[in-house]
Image (cartoon, rainbow, N blue to C red; front, top):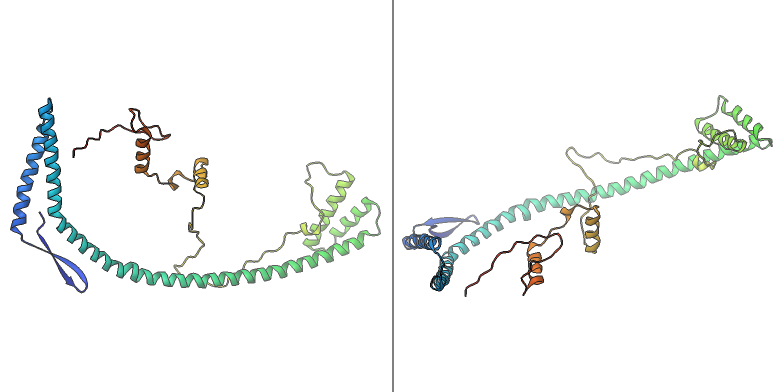
Length: 296
């Protein structure tokens, strides 16, 4: 048995000193023998008639009282150890969670604030550059289409228009962007003339579909070595538990996303069959029967 527990404060951190306690040692030795005797009697007990049943009830009462007495005797020592443990954990928390970790969290929060500002600036600059690029692209497309319209305005026959476009695409000064527009116009004429098969996909002649808009990515800071930063989402509130359960049943979410309260299920099952001799019937749950005998 643990001996008397004494507390010594060392620089604010509690320590434990164990001292001799002969009375406590004697009590523990005697109680250990009593427990061994009780276990032996309980093991050898045979209940075969009313007298042995009465003896069993009395033994149960005696052992229950013995359990309470032993727990009450040990409780002050256990409580003191728990108090000291709480002091140790409090000291640990002041140095870790409320100390270094809190300082680290403050630093990370400031890093995140800076990264968020840089990200907003990067997005704004990226949008500005892309908007300029898109306006420039539209300007070029308008110019190209205007020149092609002038080239074709004197032609009334589709074949003549097609030939004019073919001639233009062969010109040495034609740009790839203009060539893309010409090819699209030729395909549109070919469809009108019935010279292309049904396998050719329908393409819009509209100039905004001729060439894809240019996208520019902007990077406005170099991340320090060892640093990574990304957006993660925390669960703020489960406002519709039924929808979550439906997603689990549909297989969209893993069953691991929910924890079952076995104690509540046990209570619900026993409430379901209270006063009957039938087993609970809760879908998906298997019950086993266990007798509950209580002696006051």
